[in-house]
Length: 75
Image 1 (tube, one colour):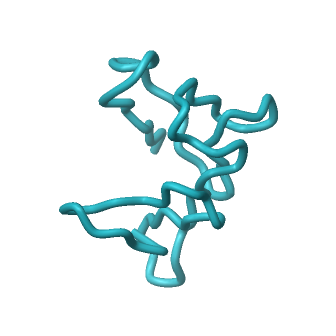
Image 2 (cartoon, rainbow, N blue to C red):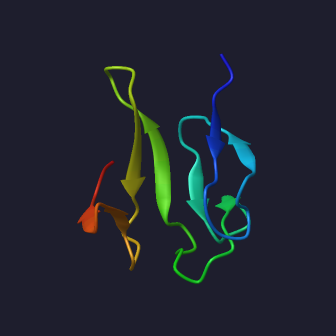
């Protein structure tokens, strides 16, 4: 199964990226680059939990990951 991450906002809106464990999102060249001033150079990482669920982990970014206006460490 080929899973893809759909980008909903920002300059890459409407694009898709292959979803794989360990994928780093950020502004650095070695990440899935998100050209946005609110994104850190290494902002978040895609993880696959032991239960087989996908998760997004904040990597200590300044702006964090927000859900329903609240900041979370792991989504």
